[in-house]
Length: 74
Image (cartoon, rainbow, N blue to C red; front, side):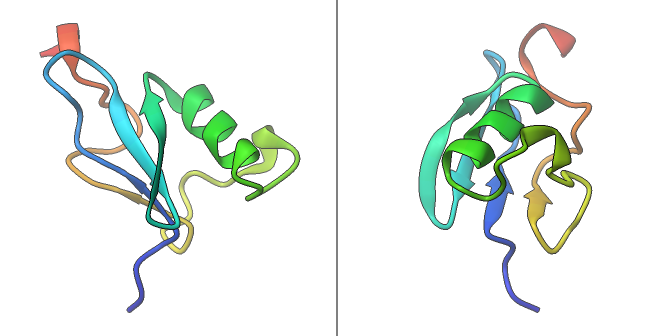
């Protein structure tokens, strides 16, 4: 199985999750909206709301799913 083009890395203790798109760091996301915006900027889709963040062929969530963001959530 190939690695999805988007990886959302484990939550940071200080909050947020690093996002890589096609092996390049896109930024630090603090919620799903940030992930969608990074993908829009990377040209994955023009309409950020249409990006299927739950599609494992597109996005790999490491260290927890889209509900876990680290920091104060502890």
